[in-house]
Length: 424
Image 1 (tube, rainbow, N blue to C red):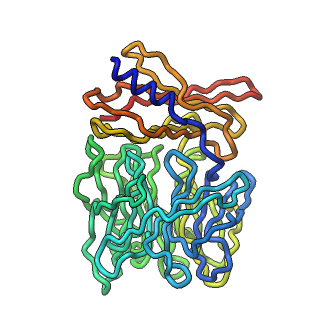
Image 2: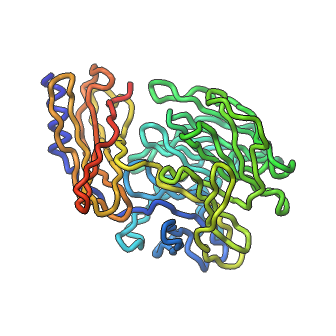
Image 3: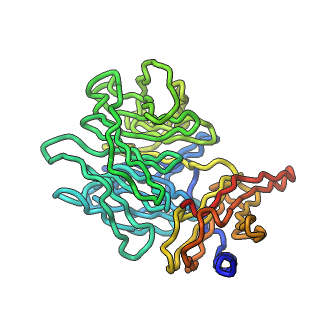
């Protein structure tokens, strides 16, 4: 009991102030081969506006993802002008005006068969917040922290420079399992998570089905939809009929009615929008639009994305948390006897007051405040506490985190999800 009080006291004494302005709910990545357009754009879905993010140093983007808890944008290098960003995984922090406050190279992912490094084609996160990226032939986990982040090879696909097979997209489901889309074969692979947050060997689940052979083989986007338990994919093929958007039923998911499972829609990347329960998609045709696509395949335009000659719009990311969601990293047990960095976050409407709280009700330890503050335009309040002790030997779920939102305008309060911690 005394040890647990010490852990909680450290959480509360740490510098748990909410972090800076951060990202919007939707961010688009552009492989700016022309060197004249911005490689990142912010999408305001409600206003129907795409705005270039200024001040970036990178020259090309092949993948983009919003951090699962704080307000950074993770960007995978596509090569760009001169190929200088091949294999670079960057972290971008924005200011309140959506200019770049900082941009650093987090790691160079040089795992895989020569020549390496290669462009990073997809970014997801494991349950501890470590980025997991796809390159041409590899799935690689990159440590979240450290001046020289370690990389761990999770899976390597059998390929060579003479084949077109490439791991081209990655996503995760609500259980922490990872899914990889492979272009050249159109295959979907799963890395199933173990209770200790490690992964089982990769398993091929099947292939996507599109209207043409070329379409089925070139996966450009992949994401999980929690409301129906399916994967959704986008593909890029030859001609108008070669581009489509479709579903992939998971073996462990709910029964899905038989049907075509796809629609010919011009897409070059997709991301699930939890608030609208639909998808944001982008294409690299001359129209260069950001679209919405429903689960019934109906479409709607959002905004035009400016681009220069030869630019390719090839990635999109969305915020993946509902209002008053509670998220804590790491998810699994820290190393016994070591100190770790704890991160906590919640999501609330801009202008409301958000809070994250921790307690241990089963041990009569009351809930106390980890972080509280006014939520900015990003809709997220996050905190980071370094040097938290973890003695080990404590049971799963010994602490309970919960979040909430207070709307000053309506004087209403929303109590969020309860999260037992750690998970194992």
